[in-house]
Amino acid sequence: MDTTSAVYLERRGTTVELILNRPEVLNAENWAMADDFHAALDELEASPDVRAVIVAGKGRAFSSGIDLKALAAGEIKTGWFERIDEALRRLELLDALTVAKVRGYALGGGLQIALACDLRVAAEGTRFGLPAVLEALIPGMGTYRLPRFIGLGRARRMVLTGEMIGADEALRIGLVDWVVPDDRLSEQVESVIATVAKGSATARGYSKRLVTSSFESEYEQLFTEYLEYQSECLQSPEHKATMAEYRSRKK
Image (cartoon, rainbow, N blue to C red; front, side, top):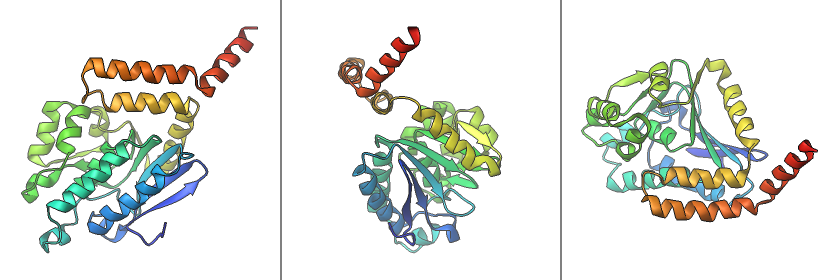
């Protein structure tokens, strides 16, 4: 993809970095970012060889959320909110592992992008929040995802007050998974990916689907899907190789 796009991809073997690229406005989200996000997802969904996707912001912030200048100019209507949330759902459902690499600010739509990822690694000093109510708006489907991460009470507080919290508080309440010094952020992300990559891509992909739908499906439906996926895992080359290695070690 063109590195001048509002969102573009950088490939490194089976790992791809999806970069939010409006650093001059702290990667604030406008129509160009929404459209380019979908274009990036088109490419990722057509690339079964991709095992991990790092989502990062260019410059000193992950994303400051909706572009207030575009909003105030009347450029952002209901269709934009639909478009951006459709992109987040596509990100959430990617087969590849997704890791948010967060620094600076993850506010509004920026926090929502991070929530749509599987894992979140944050730099010390990062600030998180959903300030939409302060702009007389609803914080998108963050109202759906946030309670699943941090519980209903904490989610109500963040949504209704619009207040920001720091990285240490975000770690304490389960909003992020790791907090590290800024100069170790890339190293920690790569370490997480390397650790996860040791497992089976087949088992990880199916497990991700089940966990993602665990708040959305009835138990019996999820149980049926689990048995189907488990059967496929038992037949997978990765499982057979793992069992062969186990038998070899026992000998």
